[in-house]
Length: 238
Image 1: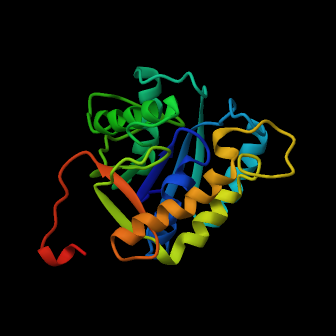
Image 2 (image 1 turned 90 degrees about the horizontal axis):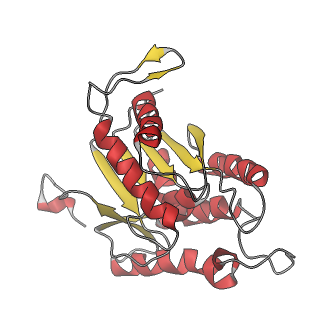
């Protein structure tokens, strides 16, 4: 299955938090979108890998993505090395996306920056024909995405561009809250983590509202780029 957009996240819920509404919007425009999670988030303070598997499935259904896969890398300990790069390359060649979305280039959680560089490097390597890969016994053809964008996560990194997500903010919130084990619950008996606070839950909306304010929209999601953005006309800029 060829996809238009493939979104990678170091952990289940990274994609939803970083670019869930953008994905929902692109799907509404007829694009085929998939998600690949690098780990199962097994080191998370709350819940379990098994619970998070179920939550990821539910969130994918809410967003309407065509496919979701998990590479089962070790949470906290995966590396940007040949072994892990080849697994990412297999996913890129399998789905042949035009656009790849991935983790923030710098963030509080060490897996986010690692995952960002890992996916970015694999996107380049995937276009080299002398790197041979196979999936399910079938040799794969080289493929390099045209664009790689990094969504914003914990840190308030200044975006290079934003997407108006005003009509899809509720879809994003529904997908995020599908991970009920991870976020604020006043009745939970589990330890409190930085993302399990009321402030963090509220920040999902107020950050999007603030980015939207800056471009005269109700809500927006921000991204950083790896190369200059190009437009055909000044009128393409809003």
